Length: 457
Image (cartoon, rainbow, N blue to C red):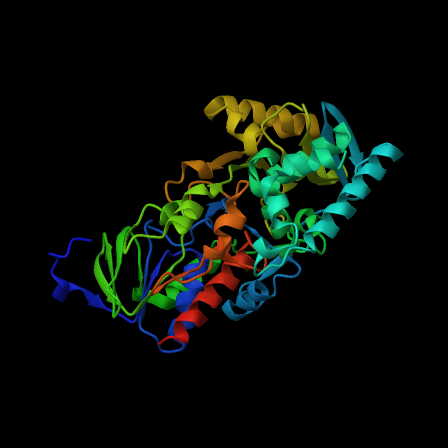
């Protein structure tokens, strides 16, 4: 920041929150509940960050995060406080697996595989579950095998587990869906921490008693909107923050909405966006390496809306997984019909490397509908609405759902994740101990950061 700015023109507040996603808004909500004068500066012209909803034929659909898990107690409590209703995710009926071009169905989570492949799958799940329990959530870099695991990628561990080809293909599809990234790009230590943070791989990928158990009637994007409405003028959109200068007795935050002077600051933004802010004093090399090294996953969502839920009538749940060399842009498909059933919808996820390689525009529509027809029959060829949202094209999110860590970063720089930098504190789902990467993690991190600040005021 230039020191020739007119500091008398600065707006004086006790706390500036940088980022109007769920984590930043919850932090501001906690602070204002304790009568702390704060302001939220959001770069975009909307709030919500990686939560965003859209209206389709009178129903609310989430372009970003949408599910509330069985154990997401903070989010369940917040939903109740905001008067927001949820409904169970539809998953009754046969599920589909497209494995290397071979289509099969199953009733439960476990696909139809030979007894040998099923044994390998069970062994891998058991071993990974045992490994993740040895990773402390508050300091994963202190795990007994932290250095060894952080030198490896998830791909390395996959090979060590001796997965058969079908099981490896299923595992790859799961990793892509959860992280939007390839197994070779993610540290094994980070993967184990993430799984432990969220209760294990089964809970992460399951619907019943898992992370996808329920949806919001009004869409998850309504949660940050309601919080922002209550905060009213304390939320400033279109306020890109360019610099944060910590002068010891106060922090100066320069933004497109003007200059703000505060006692403390909470930064609640994706790592890559934080790295774009100029800090004075400059961020330490370890923290900067962490911010720059964390890579946002690739996730795009495609909604095909129909007049009837024909797949339900045919006995399908709407769930389909494409693994291995299967053709089509989607790795995962799920029933995304509105809460009252009035707007039937299939939702396809383009994730990781296959998602990035998928065609665009009209070619995407053609490829997507071809895959849905293969899964659910000819009626899938004629949606009344077709909507695609690619999070890599969002300049301020930079991708979705979470920023993953490559090998070597967590042990070298992980202790900087939550550690305050002078008068600057950190929030955002990537900094969460519990349910990292999820809305629940965003809440945990926002509340923690607010409590840190409250203890210093």
